Image 1 (cartoon, rainbow, N blue to C red):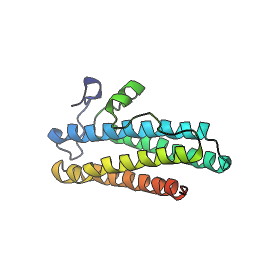
Image 2: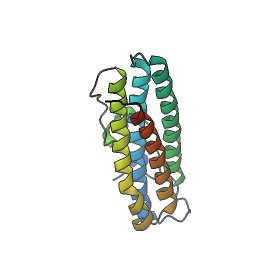
Image 3: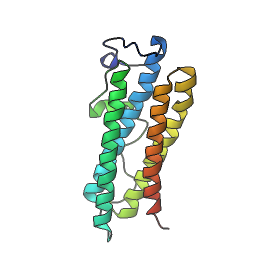
Length: 167
């Protein structure tokens, strides 16, 4: 259930029934929190990686946090487009995410690669739960399509991370 600060300000007339819009907003708000946690994790990897492949990984993590930053903006704007306010504090994100901000490994290259890969895969699995229900149950094909696009972005970033792991 949405807290008061995320409630609607003005009812948009865009074809999403008002009885469904709160559930759609809740799914998007959870997405936003997850994206922000991943953004912070990726920034941490960018700043702290130590590796014989430092320059390449430093650039890889920078490319990924920039793309995640774009996703954050896209998700927040989608929340606004359906008439809700987007959360924007660290405390809110930590309360709304299904992720943890804790790292499981050291600052070496494979540790960051594995942590980020696990987070991307967790986000992908969580988002897949919303695609059909938002489309079929909540009758919001636009948001369902939007979520599908976000999943595809995370799948590509996960693939890139996975391709650097050699065991």
